[in-house]
Image (tube, rainbow, N blue to C red; front, top):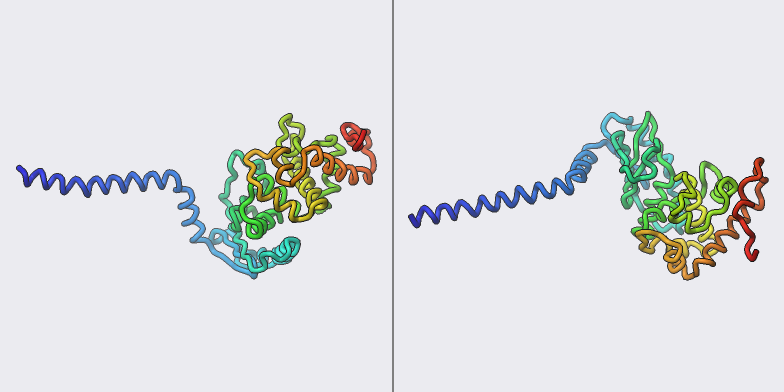
Length: 287
């Protein structure tokens, strides 16, 4: 009787360990299964490398020649962006995964874009459409910023900073493009650009452009060091008060400089045909 009980206890311990292992594995697969599947999928992709890029895509999705051309044509972009950051990461390699099956999260405001991409450190995952891949320069900029300045304090601020680093919007200068939006919508204070509680800026593109223009203004008045301070400040929900504190100024001063900077661009633009825009909500400082 005693021997039988001891045998059951001896069998019960391995069974308990096995059950615990299975439960642990199930929990890990539940929380990390997607990442694991992604890792396995990417490890089986074909790849090419250049001086600063590693390009991956599913076998057969692109020719090796197309992948090599894509990497080679991005090298001048890397050099330009890195120079603007003071050549901080001349030896960096950016990993770009081109995936036809990449899907945006429902919360991402770029989910309907044909050139959707997601940045994770120095890895960029981008949608692949057609025979030649498309990827906005802001993706490279966001990876370079991560390598040079570390993890950003807020994803939205990081995207705007990447657009500032690129320095243009649809081929035009950011300030002029933002001025056209202000002509159309009227002047928007920093609070509206950051949070837009009243839904004053309905277009996500308009808001991104105004955000990038605001970062450009900060760089012009305070230099790249000021931009870096804002980039690094942890702000789960950015506000004017937090931004002002990060930059060592006050909310009214933050708005004053932003308004002055935008007015300088607006003053040099022809008036809109319908008369709308600047005069709707653009009082001169001191009035």
